[in-house]
Amino acid sequence: MGWYSGVSNSVSRAVGKRLARFLSRRLPSYTRFESTSIDQTASTLRAGDILLVDGNTRISTAIKYLTQSSWSHACLYVGRGGESSSAETLLEADLEEGVRLVAPNFYAGFNLRICRPVGLNDEDRDALIAFACSKLGHQYDKKNVFDLMRYLIQKPVVPNRLRRSMIGLGSGEPTKAICSTLIAETFQSIDYPILPMPSDKLSVGDRSSSRGEEAVGRGGEVPVFYRRHFTHYTPRDFDLSPYFRIVKPTLEQGFDYRLFRWGELDGIAESAEQGEKPPIGF
Image (cartoon, rainbow, N blue to C red):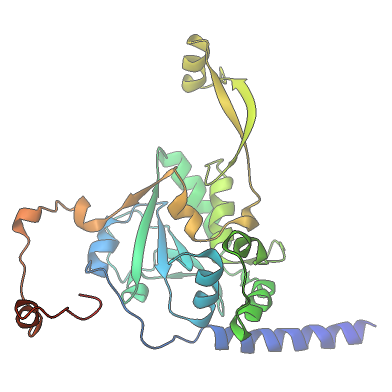
């Protein structure tokens, strides 16, 4: 029985590796819309920021289809800010290599979004980064690979409201991870909310904290929320969360639209003058 189990595990690992290589292959005809350079993005990142990626692999296609979102991957910035775009400061769960560190310029050719947690102090950030870095070397959860593979073979007609629930988000084994659940678990380790579930309950503020004392002093009550399990999170949830600020490098670095310079694409201006409609995308 032990021999059979060993052979079965070996076959599963071999199939999982082949699937991982297949699903990680980048697809052609990807379009990057934003004009922000990766150096601008890297210089804007701060410890604890989440970098969302609009990926162009087969597995990205499945995740974007099921979550109805542009964001298929999430990384956690574990640097201290100010590092170059070539410094390995992004922690991620890679399909083939597991939890690892990569440089921001690894995603130079992709549409990106920075989501920044609000109100963290240095102690919070240190705890957040320490927890995330403790996961380095863990493997990507291959159960997620098999679940997503079904939707790449033939995309079923699934109502939008049910697509999210049809993703099997991992097996929950402590030494396995996928990108969004790894980051969600990291933030839950310091009790930072992402998309908590509201309840009908109210609670008197915690007197042990200054905010709680203030609420009690006003005679106020605070709402009670429940945690979603970290395996239930997808990359787009950090974008949707009301507790993360969307940070855009061009705006952070002092954008002034009055200094913006417009040019004309050859042929576009002429066709417009002649009453022709410009091609789609312009």
